[in-house]
Image 1 (cartoon, one colour):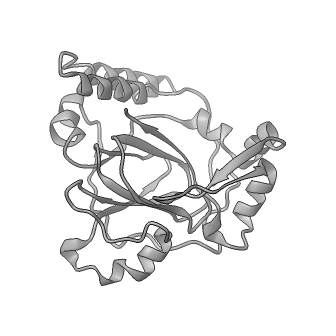
Image 2 (tube, rainbow, N blue to C red):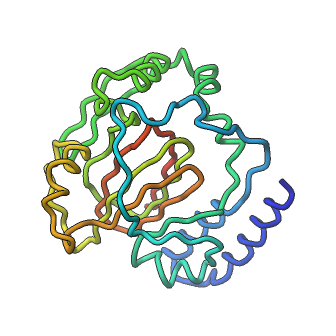
Length: 245
């Protein structure tokens, strides 16, 4: 993995240019440089025991309308994407060590007896329920209602917005729908993204459809401040998101 560390170091050096920009850009630089550090270690191949597909699985989009970029410099990021539009980042990290720690077997061994708190995700209310982690995992893989659990196939988060952020998929596939701040999507806050995709999305004319794409393991989606976004897990998904204040 020495080559991976060297590539990460070169990227971090390139991205550190322009440190004298305004404060918001500096905060973006800090997170960006952190993301560029490669993590050594051997990874676990395959699905990590999370079983792609399942009873709630749905199809990917027909055509990705979010640009994918590899070897993006900091200057290019700020000028073309940071305050303008989403982008999918490729080749930034070697997350093989973290990926191995997030396999089903390793997570159950480390946290199987812990209690996790689940909550609904909609605009108006949050309903919480406490569940042993091992039971939660079993329900993810054998759900009675695939849309009822936070990361299972067919689950997701309805349209909402907040500050800019990054989201990286560790296992599985995650489909994103994004609108700019000035274009409020047509949706019901108490209906799932899956219901929106099946009922509302087909009625939208091409000009009213969102930017969309399916993010796979190893890819990082960046979205700017106040962009509307909704997500849909195509498989049972493991992912990590970082939001900027």
